[in-house]
Amino acid sequence: MKIALIIAYFGKWPIWFPAFLESCKYNSGVDWILFTDCEIPNFTVNNVKFVQFTVEDFNSLASNKLGFQVNLPFIYKMCDFKPTFGLVFEDYLKNYDFWGHCDLDVVWGNIRKFITDDILNHHEIISGGKEIISGHFCLYKNTNKINNIFTKLSYYKSQLTSSEHTCFDESAMTNIIKNLSNKGEVTVYWPKWLVNFPNLEKPMPAARLGVHVNRWYWEAGKLYNRSHEVMYIHFMTWKKSLTSCKFDYSDNPTSFYISYSHIGLNKADRPSLTSQLSSLFVLIQTLIYFDYKVWYRRINHYVIKKILYRFNEI
Image (cartoon, rainbow, N blue to C red):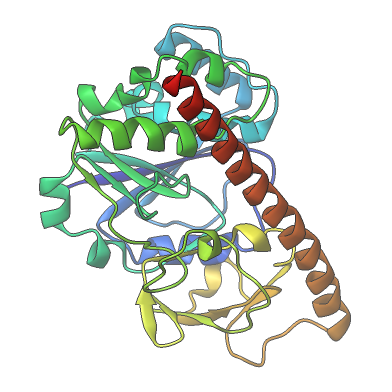
């Protein structure tokens, strides 16, 4: 089974990008296609392809493939379009059995240890989240049926053309795929979390990483949370606090540690105390905002469900 993961990223590569590429390199059973206007690193990874691409290029291609006018109001709006990538980038995916979307604030472990041929043979969609579609990792079978599954939502055009970020790739797609799965119209693999913490049950801590130092350890293509192997780490809440990576593209490290403020080749590789305190301050701000957004979304979802329930009773 051939798998391609698509990333559309614009601006400037993050500080941890060498670690991202290093972790891709060891996943020989997966290809990455990065559409970007960033400077292409002078570093070859056989299973990572860079395509020079601008936001304007995406607007034009997406408009043509989707049949309505696309004009991203801001870069983060791209996340809403992730479920459309099978159509938008279909010309790049002809030789793949599965395509997927993922994020760049990630270090990969051994993907194919967790996503086996047996899982791929028996499922059309595979998500990194437990019973939810995860924006930072989701695979879709490369068929006309699955590539168009987002159109099953009657409001998909309004969400994609909205000037706001609507979380279409996760919230809306979870709703429609759960509904279709319950009807037996699509086969989905999402029994557990594949990210960050092994044996995680509750969803909120999945992306919420706190003040962890050297807890995640990568070695020769495998990723560990302490002594437990995990498929990948997604450091969503570390985007602003992780400000140091102790190696570059060409250093070819065989192992490294991942912390809230830095990625180091050994446990002693830490930024100065001033830098660590600065990262800690930024992390606290991020966590407060993250928790606010999570609970705001949950409360809104609960209120809407209660209103709909009462309305249906009338």
